[in-house]
Structure formats: C-alpha cells, structure tokens
Image (tube, rainbow, N blue to C red):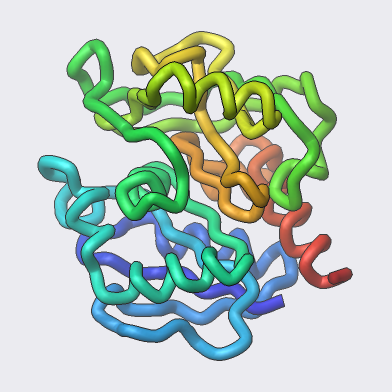
Length: 222
C-alpha cells in the first residue's frame, strides 16, 4: 500500500504521519505542496496537521490553494482515499472534499491536551479496527477546531453515519461534539485530533495506531 504525505511550509506533524503509516506497513512518499502531481500508484494521501503556514488566519484555506491540493481533490474524486488531520481537516473542508468548516475555538484559546473520543462508526476503512461506541484517548492541539455545518448537512451526516468521532467533553464548541467526519463514499476522513501522536507505546497508548493499521490493512487486502 502506497501513501503520500503532503509537506506544507511549517508543518510539524508530517514526519509523525509518515512514521505512523510506515509502522502500519505502508510505503510512504513525501510530496512538497508546490508539486502539481501525486506519485503514480498512490492509494491514500495524508494531509498532516501542525501549524502549516505558521497557523495564522485560515491556514487551511491558504494550504488548500497549494498546487498539490488540486491533484489531491482529483484523487478523491476518482475514489481515492485521503486522511486529513487538524490543519489537514481544514484543508479537506476548504477544498470541498468534506462538508462544513472549522472555526476559531469557542473559547478563543489554543487547546492542547489528550482527551477522550467516542468512535461513532466502524463502517469505514479508517475506523474498522475500532468497535463503534468505544472510547479512545487521542490528543488535540489547535485553536481553529470548532466544527460548523448547516442543519441540513448535520442531518445528512447523522443519517448517513458519517460522523466518525465525537468528543466526550467538547473542547472547542464543535456542533454536536463532532471531532471527525467522513465523505459520502467513506473514503475521505477529516479529524481534528492527532492519531499519529498516539501511535507508539512511548506516546502513552497506541489507540491512534489502530486507525493507520485499519486503513493500511484494508487497502492492502483490496
């Protein structure tokens, strides 16, 4: 299974994502944001979090205009897989690959801590390794993680079982405690928490590694 991880100026979780994919068994190619094409044969594109473009105003919108993002969108439109974490989730909403938008945290403060998430569905390549209803602990680190969508979109997300994760204790004002959502074809996942930061025992637990193992395992078997 071949993964590509996009590198933006200032990203600090791109290497963490690369290591998490590799530990799950994937071949990984790093892709610069000014590149225009993804490597041939890529199965999944990882869009990392961690202060791309300095994490200033709407950094996800800035990153979404990088040349490589057009190829990422074309990849997703063809049915390819994509995983966006934190700033990466912002990029997926700004490009229209996922619905909704990420606003400034309701408390207007940066929040960095490990917290509990409820796994809402195991019906995706990303979450098949978890049991729905399970609580896992994954860290967050953001000040623009307040998920917002209109009422029709929220209704569709719930009816189509496309909310992947919810916060047990909402840290940022996200509507309906939403921490991660899936695309209509369930092949694009965006989430604010950082599973790549809970992917080794030295991180405190390996509950984030389950997401990468689930995805790599399903694509390797496909």
